[in-house]
Amino acid sequence: MNPGQSLADGAAGIALLHLETGDWPAAYAALRTATRHGVSIAAGASLFYGAPALAFVLATSDQPALARARAVAADGTATVTRRRLDAAHRRIDSHQRPHYAEYDLIRGLTGLGVALRRLGDHGLLRHVLDYLVRLTEPVHNLPGWWCTNGPDRHQPPPAGGHANHGLAHGITGPLALLALTHRDGITVNGHASAIRAICRWLDTWQQHTDGSTWWPQTLTFDDLHHATPTQQQPLRPSWCYGTPGIARAQQLAALALHDTHRRHLAETAFTACVTDPAQLRRLTDRSLCHGTAGLLTTARRITADALTPTPLTHLTHLHHHTAPGTEEATGLLDGTSGSHLATTATTTGWDACLLLS
Image (tube, rainbow, N blue to C red; front, side):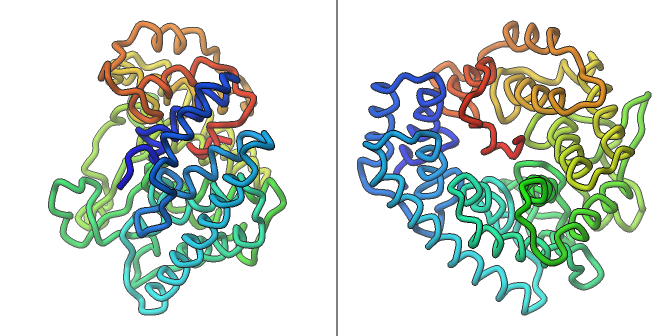
């Protein structure tokens, strides 16, 4: 794999920063690095790697000099998406459960849907939405998104698999994309019902601790058996797995379906999270994925749509006074590019790659 093609930690993500800030020489240099060895449409291609990653980044700019590159990346994205859709429907037809990489934001079809939405390929995007609707249909009395694998690739999966709720790898990613496209007017049969099905599941597993509303990051078969999650309190308030990302997905669902009650619930959960010193202390770096940059970026979007906006001054202060993390990392999700983008008032809508807009 060519690391330059990575939106997460390679030159593609760095190019996104420079396109946002209008530094064209730096953006072109990063794009040349990203495409030096071609653009991948292999099995690992996704929103965060290869042709779909480059398509998302290039769609940020309408520069004529990038027109051919945009067309090549868009064509590659379509090829990857059709191949992944065929495999996913075959898996569903055989009544097998998925690996979350089939559908998630980072490696799966939700992420490819984000790229297609960015490209304006609404026809193929609708096919992705059809798949996401099918994903909400039960398989062997478990949700269709119940995974065979575990949340930690370095550990054996829990017996019976798991349900993942994180925005990056879990069912709130499909929820956010379904909600965003519904608001765009890009809909398919069963669209609203799929949104409601995911929301009902989240309602079932909603937790309340010391005045905070939160959702477990994952659930195991054992958790289902005992009707209570092993996780007993909210963990790190990150974009990728924590309450902020899950709350944003539910806020978007509420906006799509004009559900004032859910909108209030999601925004209240977010406010309780970001005003809880114990939760904020769990953030130890400035990264987008796990740190203060992700929290601040999510907070901006939630606040912009909130019935009662939450002041962001203390989150901005927290971000600037948190350790930068791995100093040599320059990428988007874990490095300085993402950290800088979090403090930039966006004109390109770059945070669509995080399913925030």
